[in-house]
Image (cartoon, rainbow, N blue to C red):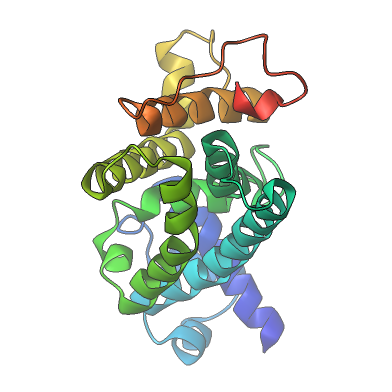
Length: 225
């Protein structure tokens, strides 16, 4: 039974990432997974509950990685605040690594995660909202310590915009490659993370009195560029 359930989840993950939730039928999922409709109904009852199970599987793994990074950074910096650059990397880097790499065949959950924020069936689900809330409770104090000059209202706005930028990058990376006529390569994981981190950090720090580090003066801390 476990093999059948995983087959359904893996097939639906790929199809939802490629086509979106509404464009994928249960028939398409069963065909890709090599199972019958009764198996989907037995394990998940509906397409919506299948999608929720898929996100729960991925997001729980994602948040474990994020919190492990935050724990390590907090231990490294002791009683002082963790730099904003490291907090941003702790949040977004696991989103690109959740399936191992940004290769075409392994980034499906990352793409699906990008779609999540524009999928009402997921966004309004109490279980998903609870997962997001618990993650926020862990990171929000660290962000407040790192950005003491940013009022709470602005921090929420800026974090919301950062989520949008990240989701768009995950879900629509091919668009960037097309618009730039190949100049930008979003399949280059480290460059993508570097550019996205710099963009988010600049937005979070705006008007906070915390100056951006200049390129070339960050020493071994490449992540802070």
